[in-house]
Image: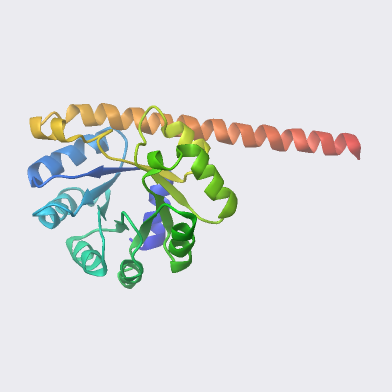
Length: 236
């Protein structure tokens, strides 16, 4: 799967659950639970010790059914290691030109972290497939996202940081092509207890919320188009 297919899959699902654990068994079972909840995309953080082994284990267990990427990637070497472990997309917390270039080398979808307008512009111009707006909660949330989209309408934004079930619909309706969530699905406490069933429930609820938000948007656009045509016909 190339970068375009990976990015299209992310946009279709609209949710990137992020998982941070050093346990291969926990990760494999948790991803299975999330998949059961209807989300077939996962981001495995490579920030922890042995995390590349965790990523490789998830790829070995789930790559036929789940699109698996690497998160918390900060440099080109991290991209290289993630690619060799089987990642199909890369998520960075901040912008790294070298990481973007290395992702292109491996034909991986790149979601580059940015927050300020200058960072967004730089990340977008670098060839990143989407900008991960992070952390959203610290910058004005949906109002800030809308303001950025107004200035950069051709940039794809993934909202991350403080995004959960209570506000994910707002971010989708505000123009985010996807959302990134961490503990809202796979929290550390549930992972440590082996309570994987809760991940299925949370994944299903988030997936339904995103689908509902997109349905409302589509109906609104359709209504506006019909209204415009009716008025144009009347004034003709």
